[in-house]
Image 1 (cartoon, rainbow, N blue to C red):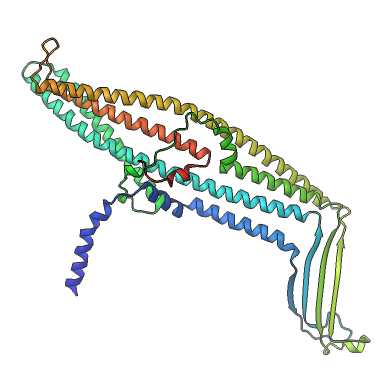
Image 2: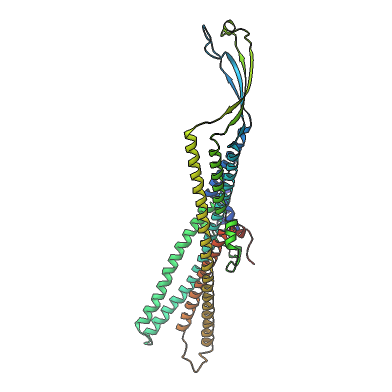
Length: 435
């Protein structure tokens, strides 16, 4: 038995590194985040509650049935109803207010559904940005590790040149400063990667150390710099704005219903059956006593004056006005944000182009230096190149590569924020990996 347990333990230990190093796609992270998100679960609960509120408003027209038992004994003249048991039924027949309450509840359900979609969009945006930033950070750490090797080699070269009397001590200090700056940036990025893994763990429920990104699983975002209908799309597709509009409509219908509670009749239907008992001696005090009794009636209520209803109607109207103003304010803010993001996207795309050209130039310079060193400084007109120049070129090339990674992330973060504004970031995350 112990041998069997040892075998299973060895198998588990052998599979543990494989499981820990398995890559996780962006689609998987987004799907798990949506399943695990507390905000999404709360939004789903709000949808269920709003659906129940709509059903409650409609059910006012459905007769209710109640069964009651009131057995008791009386001495002398009967003081209460001599029923052994009774059935009662009540329902609303007609009300000027109830149709508006139903419309209000239906609009509230739509608002809850849009809020659920908005919560999903935010969870997708957060998980996607954390995933993409982690992927970028890991690439930067790998580049920094290479840059660190070049920086250490540069320090060693400078120390040798100082000993040989070619350079002074300040050149060694400059090389050591470059190496120290690389160490500082690597420490910062490793802490950032640790935090991003922890955030992804909270979003998905997976262990933090299990996140190994897969760059190819990140879909390519659409080019939104020249999109002409973004302002229209943000009004028609943004789930947050649609929720605010539906909420304003719900408040307006509720105000209409409360206002029509005054001075308008309401019709209700009631019915009751009771089984009377003999042990209360009702038959001695009432003629024509019988056991089975049934009654049905239409109740008509006309509110002539009710100060509390009038005050409630005023409060409901104020809530509706506030909701309409809030929806207008949210719409204007969203449109301004889209314009700002679209303008920033053009600038960030230009910055990315500059970073890409600088990276290509640094790579070309590195290739040229390496070629000249391999050909024993074949250019007779230019200054002689040394291994020191090659290490500096390597460091410059890695720095420019890291700048490209940062510029790419800034662009995609802005593009995803724009997609979030038009309610399309979840569709983007499910389009599949980029080709």
